Image 1 (cartoon, rainbow, N blue to C red):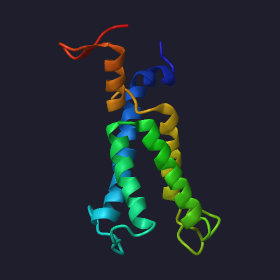
Image 2: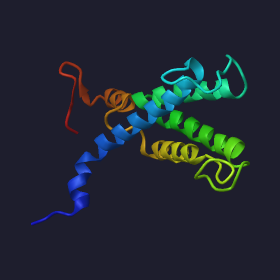
Image 3: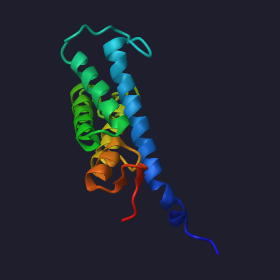
Length: 155
């Protein structure tokens, strides 16, 4: 007898959510690192420390990205990152053109900002997943982790 695809994939949901969070967080931190440190790829135009708004955008991207990747304060960091990307889209991209796909003049180049915005918006509601610092902190606060063996106790 075959089981529906949903039933077969359900056990992997927590791990896949954690993988999604990790990848999105590291990608976001990478963009922030590029602005702040010129790494892993140098920025087209170097941004001086404290320059408004680019340096602060890089700082938000780097810090929020690392927090999201680790799964620490995931919902709050994702909320800030999602709002940051919404502001970036409407402030920097949307005035160039209505269509987000493609570079100016045909499009506004804002597709990546939209993808980050809604990916982080999903994490605001879904949380960091079972493989996150948030989940570890919650298990310890609930007392459901055996401190001797560090294994989750059955509920």
